[in-house]
Structure formats: structure tokens, C-alpha cells
Image (tube, rainbow, N blue to C red; front, side):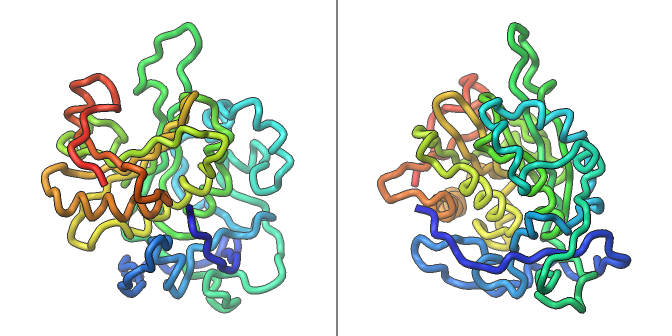
Length: 309
């Protein structure tokens, strides 16, 4: 079971005149031993600036993020028809123009405007340890054998806490996606493919959630992304995490954590145990690790498991 943590919703005003990007990209969060079953994301628990989502009414701009592909023309077109009724939700709905320029209209909420809860620090941007890119794979066209790479598009890149929440609040949630859609969140410069030079000797931890109706997939995917960008499932010198992947299939959801290598068993097992907590899995649930080489050789993502936790 995922453990929820209470935190204030905070946001950053749109189109600030100055942004402090000279600060160190250290995590700015102390080391800690999380309680058993607790969320591993340091930003949730001990950070002086918790990664809190902005107000749904929208005062956050992500115009400083780098849009790669028009979201409305690609992801929005692939949202499952059953999700049409959710468009009235202000946290999801957005006009085509707003999405295309990746910004939200300004409004004036009550209370502080920043993640510091300080109206005097509105021009501070909180950098992440790494630059990240969100990718989307649309379902293949019915009756056509579209190449997988043809359906894969890089949507947007970001490198700050504020930009991440801007992206999250402006894309369809996993529960709204059509079958055979995928989300990929990877370090910038890394394609979410086995064949990529930075992935080909690596592997992935993966788990399938088979009861789709009972799975809080939106929350699980959000926690997985936060664990990746918050650098919380590995030690500082491991440098193993490449990205996380969400697969939406007819009978299940699959969430995967990709690693750079597949040789260091102790490091990988430690990462797997932490990721298992992020996914809220019980002791009896089995998280599996397999190499990309085995996956490519078998022609399926269900290759022989090298490790389990």
C-alpha cells in the first residue's frame, strides 16, 4: 500500500523576471533512514522545499521547460475515449493554445506562491540533480504495422522541481491513456530503447499490476517519477538509474526502472528493494530484474529474470 504524506500545495508565479539557476544541483536534502514502507522520496519527507504540486487553478508556467513535440497533437489524441468525461476537471483540462506554448494562465491564489512558502522568494528555481526528458509512445495504427520507433516521440525536457510539476499538471494521467500507450521518463540524451548506447549493457526492474481497476496507477507512476528525479533509489556514487517506464496494456499496467548496467548484483538488489517500496509492494510480491540483452534476444520484455526481490 502506498503511504500518503500530507504536505501543503505550493506553486511558483508565472513568468518571473529572474530565475536563480546558479545554485548547486546537489539534492539539498539530508540523508535519512526511511521508516519501513514509507515513501522514499526525500522531497516528500525532509526537504526544505517539498516537491508539492501547484494549485490546480494554475499559476505555474513551464515555458522555461523545453517542449520537443506538441503534446496536444500527440498525447491528447491518444487518450482513451472513456476518459472524455474527465476533461471538465480543471487539473486536467487545458486549451490547445495553452498546451502548445506549455504555459498556464496566471491567477492569484490565496497564500504564499513558492515552494518556500515565502512571497519574497518567488524568483528561485530549484534545480534537479539531472536534466530529464519525457517521452510518449502512441498506440500503433489499426491495420498497420507501425515501427515502434516511429510511434515514440520526445515530448518535453526539464531540470527543475517547478518544471516537473508543470509537466505533470498538463499531460493525461496514466489511467486516461489508451491501451498500448507508454510513458518514458529518462535522463536527457538517453533514448528509452534497449539499443541506445547508454542502455545496451543495462537492464530493468519491472512489475506488472494485473488488476487494472484496483490499481492506483496515477499515484504509482507519480511516485516512480519522483523517485527517479529525486535520486532516492540509489546511492550518490551508484549512477545506475537511467529512467522509468509505464506500459499501458489491455490486461495490466507495467512500471519499470531502467539501470545502466546489470553486473553489480549488490547494488542492483539494493535499488530493487527501494523501488519495491516506492511501488508499495508487499513482501510476497516479486519484483523482477532482467537484462536488456536477454529481452532483445527473446523478442519480448518478459525475458528470463536475473534477479528478484
